[in-house]
Image (cartoon, rainbow, N blue to C red; front, side, top):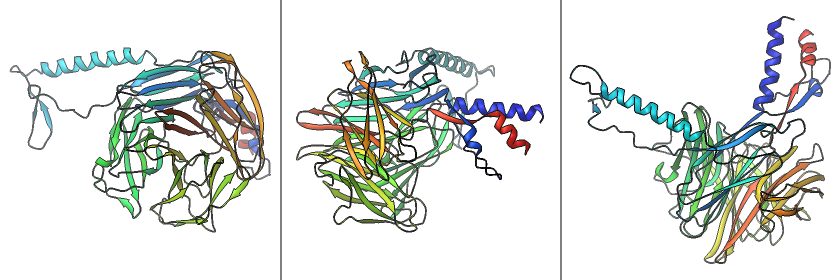
Length: 535
């Protein structure tokens, strides 16, 4: 074998360890499963993006950053969050500096001697601004000190920026950041929470609205050095919704763009699905949904389209649950709707199945489906059903003291998942195992101000959801992180965390799901690769 081949193998191993990308090896012709020889290594670099928290002057926002301790990762490295400026839409130059030609293009006005001192001055100003931006960006907003211990920071008012974060070394595997905002009055009042997301190129958001009582924004944040270009597509009950400016949206480098969905179309619909497709580059995306009467919250992206979906952790005191499902493509989907309750899987009366037409959004009211008990929705395909995406909108409270939140369908916990920003009395962890009994280990970290980590193992019976009694760190000060580990290989477990906060009798709450943290990656060992290539 030549040196080029050896160098490529070494480079692939290094790249996988750094980026977290993994390649699952198929068994070879002899029946030997080369994946068995893979080494499981911690990722060495992770990125997260947090949207601008609120436009309310009354907003109080808390960020909590946490990295679980990962075997083999060490304690070196760093993690930090930095402000991403909200890009201005006013890009017009002054009349003294530019003239507009008949074809709409702009041209600089030269000086009498033919030189372009204005342009030179502008270039210098741009350079100075870029230098200033670099100096500003060099100061992190939030920087953890050690894996295993969360750190928190706060901001207030309407000027909180979007944040761009990077973790390296021992801080990268499983890094998570929770953004929680409390707004006491006005449009979208309540508790708004979101887990900051990794950049990607495609997102699905079933459950958005352009109705008169809703103000929904899709926030796009670009972490990279070059501009990203994205399309925003809307799908309603009758299919694709015509948009005016949803195609070819540019998100400049290291910046964020909040886009009001009602400006993309004149149609008013209660239930829509947003598809964000990134043509070039990558972005982080989240939807902020604000309601005139039912408060507000963040809607995180649904997991990728699939035949079977789980929406975990609907609060047991939910007074209304609305399920929104979308089937990408032209093929219809027929789904069985079940609730995983503490005693097992049950079928909501009158909602046994759901038919979703291809390319259309379907919504159904499930009422108080949990009836005072922990529950998770399980959607499974009937024969030949197409893949779908889904989310639920949950309402708690009654009358003029109601609050709403969203739970998207999520990926399973996998090997491990974490969520930060938990309090001693305001946190509920829901675990569900739809297809088999599973043992799950839950670890509560030390607090942001002190304390000792604690762990407990639970058995989640097949087809059930359990709101577990959490281990609380001894001597807890501040908030803590929860890490969930599935100890039963091959049995899917899904999880979500609910935070609550009551203001003026209004039951504020927000729910975050716990998909696998992708903190490790399977990398085939070089010597095994050599043997496979030599065959």
